[in-house]
Image 1: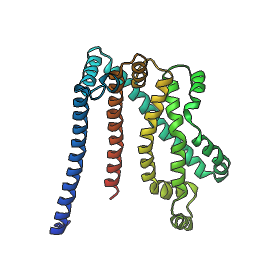
Image 2: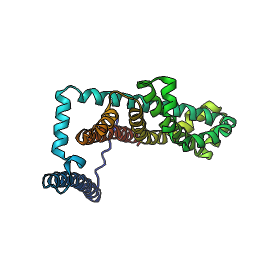
Image 3: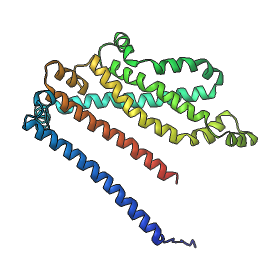
Image 4: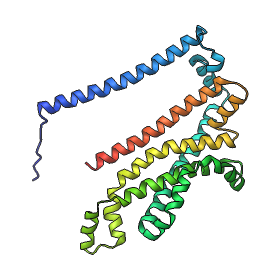
Length: 271
């Protein structure tokens, strides 16, 4: 018959948790209030003609633009296109980057050979490759995804590879003394020790994937949020540009929050 031992938290622990929860609530409340004050001032300044709403737009006009896009059936179409391209580029960049990092960790010779090329590619502005990708893959969704992949791939490789190489040598020596081979060292020591690094690289790739997709849509696209931004700028519809940027911020924030929640779940499962 098993016995369950219940440990009641101390009074100091309870007070600490309450204070921490209160501080977190105050931070969130302050962030919301700052956003509300900014939007209110923006709207008031535009209505009082302190700023030119044609150039800066204003919240009420942005809301009306979003409603118009929804009524015309374009809103979710453009959001869906950009989100699809971003998610595909994000997942591809993460998986391919991690796979290449594993190969480079496995082969020290290959890692040394490719190191200068990775550094050069990481320093290269990826937008310069955009026209090349368009010629290679055509003026469509594939080119946009490849541009997003190119921007996030090298960063993923370097981030994960550095984590692999920084694994505690003492742990590796310990499993070697028990006769562990290269595969066992990787699966039992290196990979588990660097799961936080891989998840951290996801957070970096979120932003890079959005940048890659928007750059791709700037260069070649007939739909998507990047297309709306470019089109709005060309016809001087700043309301459309600002509406697209705000929708982009919300979508990117949601995707980043999803990765943060994944990180939190991982941490809880390993406590």
